Length: 278
Image 1 (cartoon, rainbow, N blue to C red):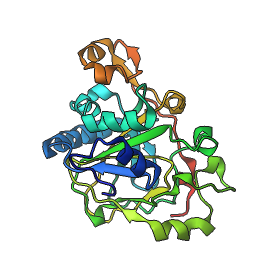
Image 2 (cartoon, rainbow, N blue to C red):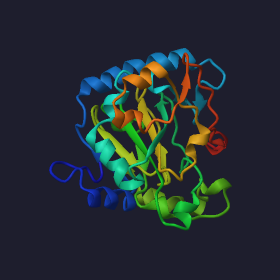
Image 3 (cartoon, rainbow, N blue to C red):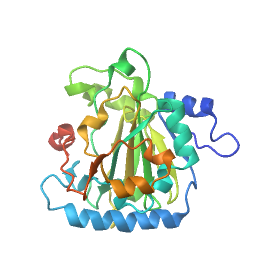
Image 4 (tube, one colour):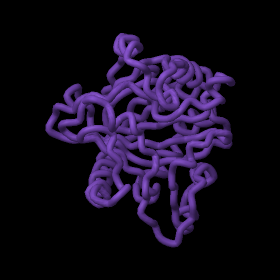
């Protein structure tokens, strides 16, 4: 994992900022016991089986690849993750003390998933184009010990600052830039218990899963106060769940309060991942 932090400098603001403003991705190896990842795996696979045939419950991200948004309280270890000192330190360093968790979900490339086209997860905001500032982060936790045949996440470090024309919302670089990303590409092989943080603007892609098993990854999206990514998501929680959370989590979870959890109907369709030639 690039820019992996270990004691005593893992919570150093300069190191966090340098990694995310430089390569665009940082990580902490062994942040959690592998048993946490095993629980996540079981819960994610059960939720996927539940929602895969519900309209809007699981969105395709290419062949044999799906993304599912979920309610935080459906994960037994969500609060443990969101309260981890490294998670908090990274959010505060980049997004400020009033950061907001606006998305919880998971991505699953199943066997047969293909190389995605190079892309960003959403349009580049003015805070980045004009202000040269990152105002959102994506945290990822794998639920398996990733092997090359799993179709690992591939990222082109430093490309969160790239600009390119000729595509919708600046998300999909034109083909003449693909060699730039291929030359910089780094495949990530995290293990159970690792956590990473990245700018979703850093150009990346999922690669082909040629194994015989899925590779689920938990995704937690976090915004600075001026970011608007939360408008694409329906973060829900019951009052009872919110009351049980420690303030370090509850104060940063602007969830819609519901009497009982409702199905999450997703809206963040990434058309370029569906229309690409695979």
